[in-house]
Image (cartoon, rainbow over all chains, first blue to last red; front, side, top):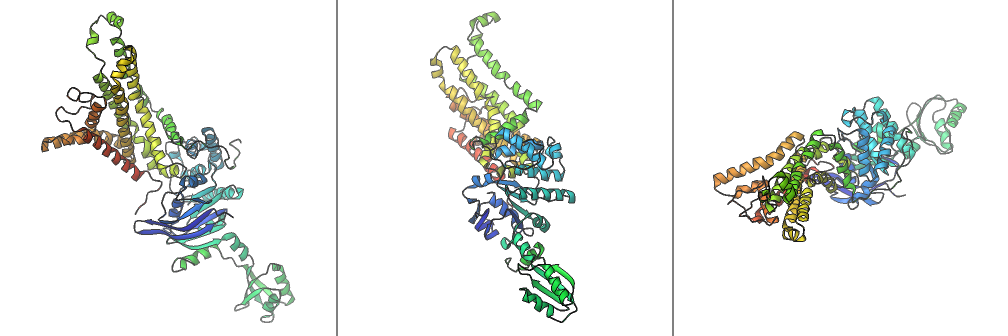
Amino acid sequence: MEPVIELDGLEVRFGDRTILKNLKAKLTGRSIGLLGPNGAGKSTLINTLLGFHKPTSGTARIFGKDVRTQVREVRSLIGYMPENDAYIASMSGVRFVRLMAELSGLPPEHALERAHEAFFYVGLGEVRYRALGTYSLGMKQAAKLAQAIAHGPKVLFLDEPTNGLDPPARLRMIALIQEIRDRGDLHLLLSSHLLRDVEECCDEVLILKDGNIAAFCNLEEERRANRRFLEVETRGGVNGAFAEAVEKLGCETATGAQGRLKLILPEHLEVRQLYQIAADQNIQIRRLNHKRDSLEDIFLKAMEAADGRL
Amino acid sequence: MAVYKKTYRPYDGGLTSSLTRFLVIPRYAFEEMRKSRFLTVFYITSFIYPLVCALIIYVQHNASALNLLGVQNANRLISINTTFFMNFLGWQSMLALFLAAFTGPGQVSPDLANNALSLYLARPFSRVEYVLGKMWILVVLMSLMTWVPGLLLFMLQAYLEEGWTWMHDNSSVAVGLFVGSWVWLLILALMALALSAWVKVKPAAGALMFGVFFVAAGFGVAINGVQRTRWGHLLNISALIGSVWVHLFGADPAVNNGGVFFRMPQGQELPLWCCWAALAVLCLICLYMLTRKIRGMEVVR
């Protein structure tokens, strides 16, 4: 499978400061999250992929196109929604998006049609003739998304898309991003310091810390793996008998104090069979949790690693 | 698909040529400019002088028109020669300076003020194309005020003189009109964009444009006075361009020292190469200023 984004020893330096340090990764997911604390290098990575910063050494590729030598081709694949306000205040929303689509190479009549479509799609259809300078923050964010998708990119870079949005506006933005992701027509790279945004929208996560890759995980696989990992609290019965019985069914177990048990279910075993065994042995299952190694756990572990790498 | 059908769809249509994509910027800018009544009136007014010149050329060659006016010998008063065309270019170039000062500051500063540059440059669209697109706006407008009517007047005069001989004998005038205008237009366009990129407040950028011409010229005169030199004229951009025009028009510097508003004081002329070099340095400074500011992302080191 061709990687969407490939980082090949990418290093970016501003003066004496090394911002990105020898990054190596192959990102293949449909929706890739870019996480990290402030100053980790998320925006620098996005700007480098866009060709705004020249790599000091190494390179990066988007769908095989080198950001060093094929900037124009790379940019023609990308839709970019920047973190900060970015618009022309005196222009109407639809005119602005049309201009941006034309600069991406769309003929004027197609650009106009798609600008209208994009505005309706992001929910700004009714205000598309208003000057962008009069838009609220939430509307400006949506307008930025509209200009990023109007020309039909193959990869969409979203830099902190929910920045400054109130809860309902954030939910609308997240729903839009999820809808774009689920349509499957394009790939997403979502940069955020909000774990929830990334968890809700992404299936792959790259965590940066101090310019290094601190962790890289496939959230979808993590979720699937976690589904088989249980924590059980039991009462009554003969000590250790329950653990022995489930081990005979192929579970890996670790016994804790006060009837607590951690176990990994094999593929063929269903949870209700545990209840069956417990009932047979006259044991009460007081608590049963699917242990979930959340993105927060992954992130915190990555941040705890001394050198910024797991 | 109807626009109210709220869905996203990929684009699979054709794309425009990347070579002409920079022309998108001037097209949008012209549409915006048309909304300004002041600019429209100013621009139309700027064609009065070329019309007057055309009338003069016509009357000069039309004995019956002179008879009708009762001024049979008037054609001796005005000669259609190098000075006539240099004055035409001088006057129109002055108007071009005003136009650049009015429209130039609004070109880059709004994009910088609201960080729109990152959106322009995140597309298959380079910094050079951006600057070229913005320059195109000014160059087209100013061309229509300077060398286009200038060459039309030249051809009218050649036509009324009835022959290629006049055209051939005065070909340096045509060269002067064309090349001289372009040198001036490029300087004005670059300077307007550079100031627009650095001064985000439009009126301040416009005022600074005049300041660069008039205050710097005054400063140059002060240097000349204090130091008893003539090198202070290196700061007088209009005098520098005037000297270049004299050369391009093939005029005699002892007789003709530049068009209206662009005259180098007699006896204080600078070597021609110094004038060219000073103008080149000015252009390089403007380009450097643009390079520093026209970026997708500003790097804080």
